[in-house]
Amino acid sequence: MPRESYQELLESLREDVLYMSEVVLDRLRLGLSALEQKDEEMAWQVIDGDDEVNQLYLDLEQDCIDLLALQQPVASDLRFIAASFKIITDLERIGDLATNLGEYSLEAERDVYPEVDIQDVAEVVIEMIENAMDAYDREDPDLCYTIAETDDEVDSRCETASETVVRDLIEREIDADSSDAEIEQLMADVSRLLLTIRDIERVGDHAVNIAARTLYMVENDDDLIY
Image 1 (cartoon, rainbow, N blue to C red):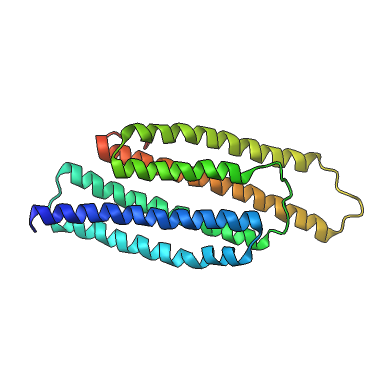
Image 2: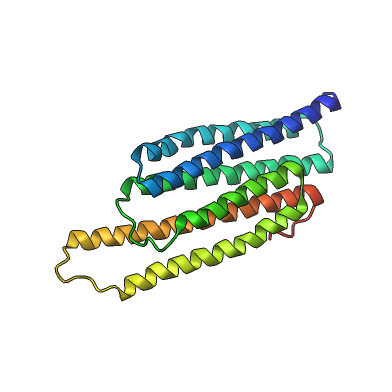
């Protein structure tokens, strides 16, 4: 295959990976909106949309395999293809976490801890993904480190949120007149909130993974991978 055509295929792969990230971000935003608004229709849009994300992943995985089989890539091209494959894996997993949020919203009837601002932390995480994909697109190593630093803030805020929920549950005085069903509902609400916090934190981790693979792609630097 002529080198020019090969380079066009590489650029097409980059554009397709960026498109997949847009689809995944849309799913994540929709999942968060469904959770905030307790909107069943939004929730099902997220859940049903996971098939599209999975298909995008499979198509791009095959593209990566085909590119590797076309010819022996030079080192920089090889890192780009390998990084792209790793990045679509992280994007697919973010899509799974968005689906989780949709499923949680189907069960959510109330906010048991309105003082725990999940949406605010989620906005930071969404910006991390946007920046990670921008770093991949523009091959910006400095932005990769900024994303890793932001993740420390997200981890701290998620830890504080989880501790707030657990501490309140321990200190809470359960009304003696509460039925078993009411107590079970409270525990289910708390469990769902803790899972939501965990999943948002994991989305941030995947954003760091994307940044780490981008840094390796651009500078052959594995500093953020380990």
